Amino acid sequence: MSGFEFLYKSSSNDDLLYVDGPVIEVEITAPLPLIRYLRKSNLPAYPLMHGLAIIDTGAAITAIDAGVLEELGIPYIDTELMHTVHGSAEMQMFNASANFPSLELGGISLDRVPGGSIRSATIAGTDIIMLLGREILRNLKMTYDGPNSKVTITT
Image (cartoon, helix red, strand yellow):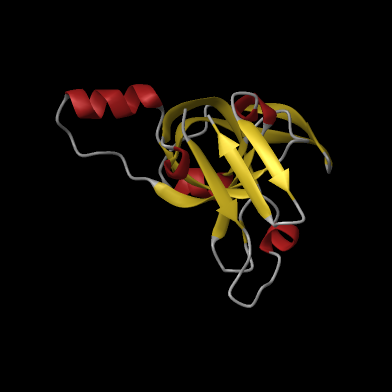
């Protein structure tokens, strides 16, 4: 079991947990079968996109910013009607994978993950590139400590 405690106080004592919400480091890359093939064939590794995932317990599924997937050269595989807080919309679906370095959790397969308009900047300027939904969160234990501005996650 690995875990990580995220403290959300800035040097100016801003409550970043309140301002930005709970976020965690993430790396987005190609689907796992492609990653394995490249390793097995001694080919260069597929690029990673680094950013933050915002933890959204209200989201049934994870979504990644479509621009991130396009920048990585990951093609969409299909479109699907998705229901969001903003209403229903056709969204492009992708196959990708994610790593969460601070949790030492890697190789999370993201099959048919929707590409949406997720990218936004935190108060510190780091890009949020993923909305982390319950299908991944169900495998983690998270404690949200608002008064102390910290979140603890264990695997």
